[in-house]
Length: 145
Image 1 (cartoon, rainbow, N blue to C red):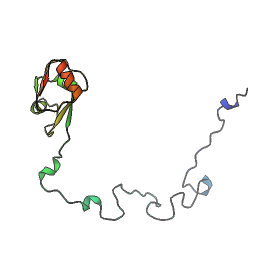
Image 2 (cartoon, rainbow, N blue to C red):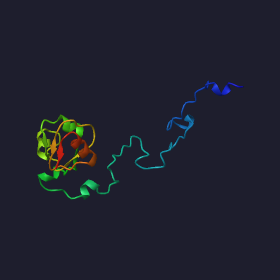
Image 3 (cartoon, rainbow, N blue to C red):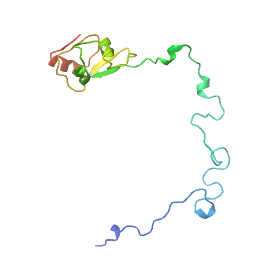
Image 4 (cartoon, helix red, strand yellow):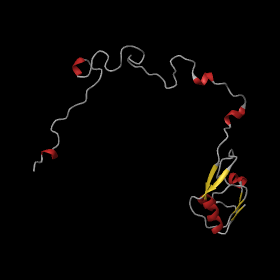
C-alpha cells in the first residue's frame, strides 16, 4: 500500500497578486477592474449610501416634525419567570415592572414568558401571560388575572 497520499506538499505556490504588472501572472493593464470609471481608479472608495448622484433616499423622505419623532413605539417587552423571581413586589403590574427597572419606561406592553423557574407566590395583574408561564405561576401558588 502506498503512502504517497499522506505526504504533504513540498512546494507552496504563492497566490497571484492582482495589479502588479504583466509579470505577476495575473493581468497587467486593468487587472480585473474593468475598463474605465470611478471604481477602476486607484483609491476609489464609494460610500454604501451613495446612489450615483441620484437624490439620496434620506433626502427624498419627508422630515418628521416635533420632538416625538425620537420616541419610537417599542414592541412588547418580554419578562421571564427568572426576572419575576428576583422582583421585590408580590403584585406584578406594568407599573411595578417599570418601577423596579425590569423594563424601559417607554414600553406600553409586556408579556410574561415561561423562561426559567419561579418558586415564590406572585399575583400578575393586567399583563398577558403565556400558557406555560401561567401553569408555572399557579404551581408556585400564585395567581394570574
